[in-house]
Length: 360
Image (cartoon, rainbow, N blue to C red; front, side, top):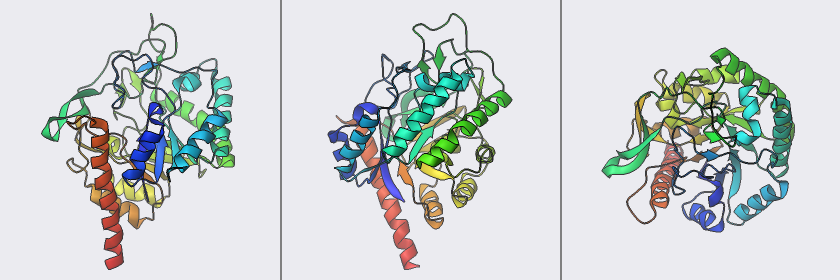
């Protein structure tokens, strides 16, 4: 397995590539969506959380991921000894009607196919996605982690409806409202996912690209009146069973899975890893279950992270582990310090487990 770092769009520069290489990373998972576009509630130094009006403006629906830009990012990262292991998340501007089953769905599916082909041509092997209407909603920020470090959590259900024009956390229209998002059932959302995968998986497979599904975050059956798909760990199997394609894989977020109210995280990790369905891993620790949980430092939560590394190693997992986010540390560079702490722990855990096997 490989050590990696997740970088937001504004971090795709030599400074952050050097930081990743210095921390021992060999891979990156990058975001091309600008979650901080016109979003006063989101500080660029940390993960986006936003408010009930979302994270900010979505991108330009006519501006697809550019082939030259993708090739340039790959080239610059390679210059620091880093591979681009995945791109994480489609812009709501590019697939809002795929999620909503709206009038531009066919056009947007065609555009997604084009972007998948470009990603494959650039040599990037994976795209992570989160098939969700409300997106990553309902999280709070506070001094939740050890030593009063700032982290993200959830402090109760969030039932306020999603205003019209807000899809997957982001504003896709000039103004929100006056109505709300059209109603949808769990069955309808699963049908939309099945339609999406049926349309794009053949293109992904032909392009050498895997599509990796993130579990719901937060993993509630409903958020803001909208249904969720993978809010219990066993529901990942339902997603896998939609298609036997080797490109149908999982973006395995340990924090989200641990927040779920059912299942044994270690048994499910063993199962999905043995099936060869884990594309890459979000290595994050938490305390508590939805709707009340807090993110912690990687060594200080309820997940036995070393046990997870042992399971992955035992099943010959070859993918990337990234700390998708981490508590902010009290210093002039809180994001860098939090990530450096997590990466140091992860690198040591991977080396320890590998040496354990050699000595047995």
